[in-house]
Image 1 (cartoon, protein in one colour):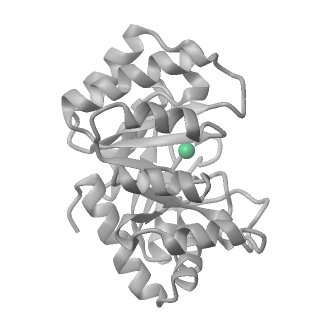
Image 2 (tube, rainbow, N blue to C red; image 1 turned 180 degrees about the vertical axis):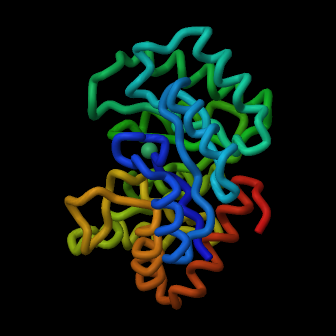
Length: 254
Ligand SMILES: [Zn+2]
């Protein structure tokens, strides 16, 4: 069985029928999905899905691209939601220098507040990092180490090594199935295996052969198969490995 450790099933436009998406996932042997919030409203909807469906968990937080709207009240809402038993991590938080929806100051404020919240609650943290690895790693290396996961890891070899030094986990998505992702596969081949989890980031990041089409949690099976080929193990071995890793990081039992 597989866990999609990062998807946006709370995006009602992309997923008008959540029950159908979960049924489709289950038929691809994906029995658990972790739904990620990008602001307080979106996190609330992730938690509502976790309340409604057994195999659904939620990640609660402010995505860097939404931090122009972030306020102390916005932090308070996250703080209240994070005590829910199915709120498994704070995220997706971090820095994004690719898009300019929020200033560096706005991104920093939300990031530091939420890192402090993670430190005080002991919750694992899921990062979104886009063209910002040097800045984010510098911040994290200056702070006490927490359980960290880099969702959709896209750093280079030396940034991966710095993450390994902090005992981070690494999320792998659709791009591992792309022909051109030679360097990405090399990076994942060199990582400690017990630190890799699979995710879809659906509705984005569709793996082959669905590239360019909307993604869904069922497709995490294709990501797992491509990772298995990369690591030179069977898909079954890879499923056992990545599911065990996800259960350990998110503290959910099998
Ligand atoms: Zn995401």
